[in-house]
Picture (cartoon, rainbow, N blue to C red):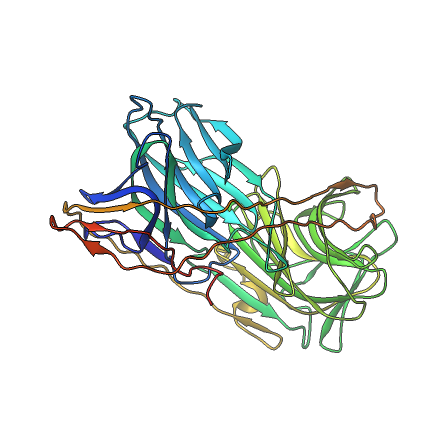
Amino acid sequence: MLRSADFNDASFQAFFADSGVFEVTGGTLSVGAASLGGDAAAVYNIDQYLPIYFEVAAKVYMNKPTAGWKANAFVIFDYFDPFDFKFAGLDTSTNKIVMGRRTATGWVVDVQAAITGGVKHSTWYTMLVAVNGTTVTVLVNNKAAFTDSVTPRLYNGQLVALNKGFIGVGSDNARGSFDNIAVQVLPPTVTFDKTETFANSAGVVSDALAGGWNVSGGQLVGTPSSSTTPGVALADLGTTLSANSYLELTGKVSLTTGGFGGIAFDTYSSTEYKFAALDLTGQRLVIGHVSRGVVTVDAAVARTLAAGSFHTLLVTIKGASVSVTVNGAFAGSFAFNSALADGGFGLLARTGTLRVDELRIRTDGYSAPTSASASSPSGGTASAGSTGTASAPTTTSTAPTSTTTTSTATTTSTATTDTATTSTATTDTATTSTATTSTATTTASQPLPSDGTSDSSGTTTQTDPALPVGPGRKQ
């Protein structure tokens, strides 16, 4: 967990009001617009960089809508200024769970889903917003509502995921409360962490499903069997991960001229799998799937890729979402229709020769086989060509108090834009080579901090509130 706020000490606990009125009372954060038709938004100073995958958990409560007020409550993320952020939460006006974006024209809902029993005011709900790159999954009361992908933002000339902006809470012309807000990073417990360097053998990547695989010069080398049969080599952990496990695969790979290869996941055969691959002919990173041998490219982002050069491919999987970075830069995300971690995973050589200098596997879903005769991967210990570690979780709890603190704020800002192009393509067993690019424009405001002042009643008030320099925006 990066940071949490339970408001039991009657303070704002690193929340900074940007608009509306915020008050800490009874161990909860009360939120409301300053007047009818207004916004309420506060950002949370995490003071750390958010990783590609993170979660925001919160308890939310909406006051009864009366006299022109609405009833809604949102977790805010990808916040750059008061008119440029994303939100997800509950809205009684539509009686649904919603996700969307704040623009200069208002709160725009892009995705919505029904909830069993409808959305009711004066009721506490437990909400979780899980972000994987640019893919967002929303759960209410521990039940998944929807998963959806948004267009990546262009920031400082580079496409970035949703971890670069601030996170926070807010509402649209509404009043309510938030409690037990937590920003957490998975996995809380890494049960399997191994890096194969292929010094002496293929190590844990021992299941050569198809194609030719051999170790040469401290690298694992893979080739396809034919133009229609790819090379697929899977990691053998001796067990299957649970479907909703967190799974992180990092491969340092190179390809020959015209090559197509990378990471395979959710694999069931050489004709049924998903992939995140480098396409040297198309000069792009592609995310896609193969069903009955037919290749479909679900998402593609242009990248400059040199034959023979090693590129670091990081694939992060959680639930039905997958995100990919190439050489440390975010490349793309995609949401599939079902959870991904319970299938096989490993390496893919579809065209040309794939050379793998190392492969790291990290997950919280590994449990050692229970059979007395079974052994953990590579004997369960780090050997030549591999390293392995694990860690354990911790928990804490606190008790409530009831002191009251108030924060009031108003802001104005220049509107920004966040637009981009995306494309998908469906192909037969031969891969396509048309490059797909994604572009966007945006600007971000970054006010300087200001100190709070105290009035004669002892209530703490923030005037001309400023946002802290937070995740991805440190100077």
